[in-house]
Image 1 (spheres, helix red, strand yellow):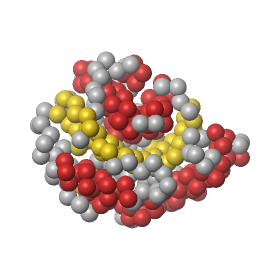
Image 2 (cartoon, rainbow, N blue to C red):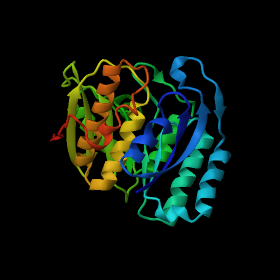
Image 3 (cartoon, one colour):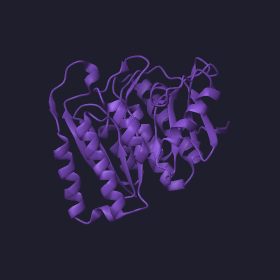
Image 4 (tube, rainbow, N blue to C red):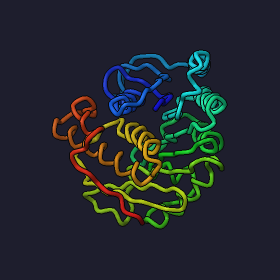
Length: 286
């Protein structure tokens, strides 16, 4: 399996490609990573050093890979946080270029916009780019509840409302694609306070995965879950199987992080969780 992952990079900690690449490699995927920034650490610390790359620089790297003839072997493009419209345009150029080389390749878009705790934290115009340009090209989308509500204009306090919004989001995606949605970090009126939910939707069917809430507050877990879900959806051809495998692995990753008392996710210490999770959670049809 070959995955082109276009995301941010930090030298210290694990967000963006620094969260997505290692789990994919540990599972046996070849990952061609293109970094959109090179920072010392994630911005949640309030201070960081480094450089933001331009859309032209990202596009040049994509075209350089294409010049090697490698894109005919690319199975998927994965994207996350888009720093500005130029980066977004370069990512969509990658999707178009990869599909021209391999029509069977899929695009997994993590439509990063924000969350309930911080609100919108992307630059002006990125939300519209996600809604109007990126999602119509996406086969898989992995929003949290805040992003689902922003993208669809629907409030989702209940599980039934979540399902209706997920169907609206699916209708916004590539017409001849998978139209597969993974909803992460999901809390509704039905979610016990000591648990957290995820829901996958594809082909009119829905599956829910509920795991215990862990005492951690870390960045980058969403980047890992998007990458793992993409891998397992490619591997199994099943959204339900991908939800179970990815959710079990991320729970193990966060459990290990909590046990070690880390501020950053314990990616290396918990690496066995990616290939053989200690706790297996099975999705239920809803």
